Length: 285
Image (spheres, rainbow, N blue to C red):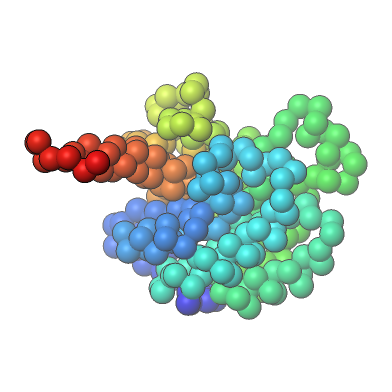
């Protein structure tokens, strides 16, 4: 069963890696076997997300942003039954919907901590929405403030906090009001594979956009840990590019570790087994 870490213990592990010159790797794990072998690969943080569950069922990540299932209950149960029992040492965090009006969030966070989660990430998030829909959410009491409040509650409960933002306005608000331990600029849906986004910016453009947000983050919270995520970051070479060209301390991986590690290898392995044949001249009928 996964170890539960205090916030300071968690941070000490992360900064220890950084000071050893090792960039951080944070990944999602949509089921137990993913968690088991991703941990063996040496990652630093495992995250349980409703999007991870949908990815491992063969659907696109954005399924996690639609009203299918109960996002928080899904993460709780996948964590409790599948991921946490398979993990030995790596800290596990929960991606939680802060805009959940049907829960007492403090009690829910306490329960998440009790079963073994060591941190909280505000995902799914209304930050992904923009335009009139986002403005309406904010004006009707269903906005980003709930997520900020959730992260502050998690901090009070001695859990590590991770914050997502998609633009500079939300990033500034998040960093000033919640001061997350880790800040991740979400550059957009990961492209590639069978359910990835087919368009999008280059890795060079992603690095430029990310760096602008990292500079803002460092001005507000100099000790924040910065991770790169999404869009054109689909393989280790892209991760190296982000490390080389931005101030990030590492990468966060979802589709690029869960889904893409399975799609082609599994298809190829199935095809290889289908290629076996009867000996020449043999009849089995």
